[in-house]
Image 1 (cartoon, rainbow, N blue to C red):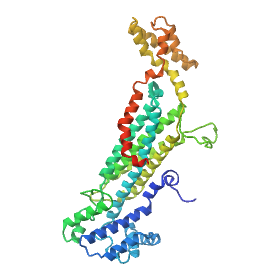
Image 2 (image 1 turned 60 degrees about the vertical axis):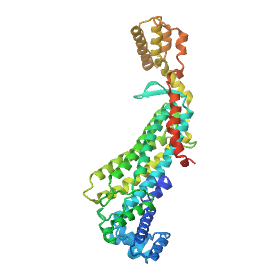
Image 3 (image 1 turned 90 degrees about the vertical axis):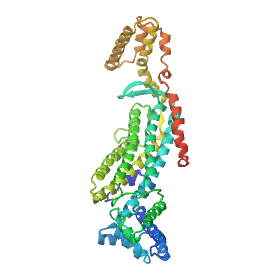
Length: 469
């Protein structure tokens, strides 16, 4: 218990994302790259035997000899060389041809690209599940009127489902960007120390077609349709910035949702899950704190802050490469993925057991609804022969007086009764009371929800149906 534990690993993230950024996956991928490189070079005419290839492949099944790796890393102060020597000890027959013409960045950058791509696929899966849950929530409450707020002040009415569509729409924008990144991410490839392919030109006796064929085959073996045509020693670090900006965007959408849930929970209109034995406060036993939404908020801030770090790394690379990107990327990229993974898990947990309180929503509406019908009263009064400006001033006066009574004396809203009793307003009581139906004030909210789901959300869920099975 004396050593630091990463909370994202210990508490929040999924095992699949933790494994994706684990040393085991990273260094196994290095070995797979070495094997693929050797096999392709052999097929292109380099003097490598079938026995050496089989020796490499058989050693892929063995555990990494971590003690040997540690010994060599202490000796060389170079992680790639440590693993190269350790792998060479296991695959002794193939030792002379491992890493032929390659550089450290061939391993590290290609592996990073593979892990980033696989991480995006994990995020995609969880994002689709959240969108699916929100879709169901929006449909369930598409007709339920609720107060809308601007500046966190009561505005007019919307519906609970309509508000949920704004959460979905943010995620659809994130999903569109995620799909774009997955489609366009490229393999780093194999181009030597500074991207000129000089070592491979020597290896293949100046045959550029074989060098190109090698990169094409390598890319295919690792699931990529394309590789970056131009690199320096590394792939362009702006790629990391693009990925972390995407993760920041997902975090922004998540944070917005968590804010809304916390505000609405304070109004007692809805509530995130709260377990039977859960304790909200060590001192205030009645508290039901929205800890899941708060956790989303906390993690989202963290991810958004990390995206700026990747921007600074991309902006300050020197010429063909400087190593001050390395330690930063080891921290920033995995942490961002682990945090967003955790955010989407928590979001899904909230949606699985979120509770809506229609009676509280109705109660809050009734406090403000009388003010919403002022325009209707003006229109009806004008229809009955009154002057628009005169009626507007009368209503404004009553509104101000009611607000004073509510705020200074704690009285209930008697605005409607004041209007009914005012003989200068030519609208009868029954007509005014008919106006007090909340459904009159939700506009086309319900229809907008249904059309949005049918035209934009369902096609996405159909496209990714295999992620919901």
